[in-house]
Picture 1 (tube, rainbow, N blue to C red):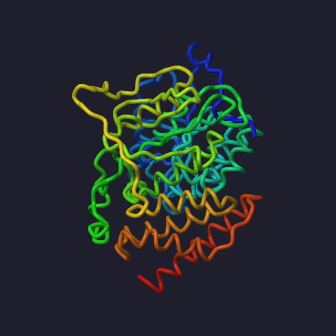
Picture 2 (cartoon, helix red, strand yellow; picture 1 turned 45 degrees about the vertical axis):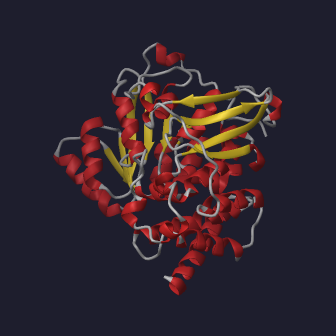
Length: 411
């Protein structure tokens, strides 16, 4: 398979001529969505918000529509969409309000859209991201689950649709920035030995296994470096977030599991590294602020002001590294296992994790029950070759059901 990602060369000459690009933001009220809007607001001469989408947060969406006056706003539930439409009308705002999953795909693939920020958390982001790929958009991918669940199908859609794919996760964006641009079948073809994903280690980097058994919801949500939504923050605490990133890196960079290493780096200054066959290691550094990769994706191949402050290495003083502990963080091991198993195994891993994280956030289970649920569902599932989105959706539903059955017995 051609490495469509690293060969992406969008023609942005129209940007330099003052032509404004339309942006659809999927997941506008989330952390990534808000930070994307922050960067866009710094460049009104380059970008226009075309569509905003959210789940059911009427008040947040109303505020964003008042500020950015998008052509479309999408909420998932009809009642929420109706209420938003009524409030917008009373304010004299002409934004068209749509609802449902079909509408998400419509604003992602709309002919007037140039850029799609795919930032819906979880499996719900899969179909609109696929629609953007088929429509040949420039996709800023912040949704991990699209590649974890359907990496083969999504990368095929990107290639066949002529889309440009730019990773927004800070780690993959860092790798993209220091990876060669040539097309290749393997990393060896472009002189790359391996990629190194850095991990902060989360709030429990130095916790004992006994301490982790007693972790509370509040403790797990207290990330030391990054400001993220609750689901991603819990994934970071369990290191499942890094496990999902390993699977993403496999698809984005044509890397085998053996060519992807995870290194704990608590300062979160080096966002990831690429090791070349001659022994050189190139790294991308910066303050832990998602506006940097967002600005890079919006402006690629040019650099834009992001609002992020300069990195002060003298103030930081030191950079530490450690090997991840697979005993205390079994979710990372399970992700590697799923990647090596292939087929639908990553889909099952992701589905079980989403149910487990929901249960932990609802304080139904303990923190270390999260990997127990995932391993149980994986061990009782049959893995299949990935053939269609419909198959992925079915496998996802079956794995969620199995995880919920575990909860009924053990929670």
